[in-house]
Length: 48
Image 1 (spheres, one colour):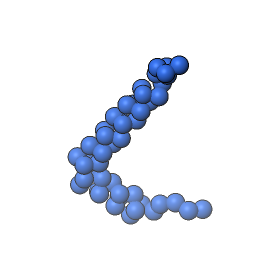
Image 2 (tube, helix red, strand yellow):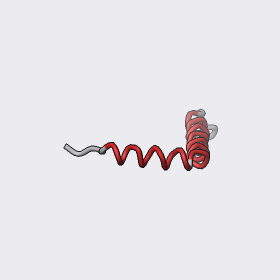
Image 3 (cartoon, one colour):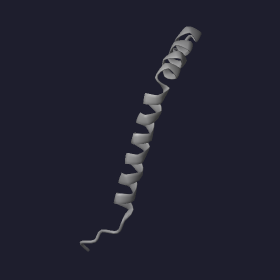
Image 4 (spheres, helix red, strand yellow):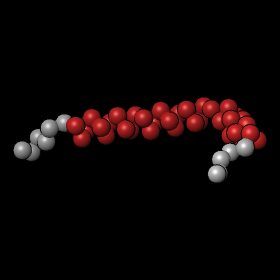
């Protein structure tokens, strides 16, 4: 079974906390783009 050892988990958490502002901004941009595309593709087709 593969997984992460405790040192790897701590390493990732330390990296996230050191880069939190950039990571959170990237997540926000991705969510905004998802919402835009979802809204665009849920509209009825105007050409019909």
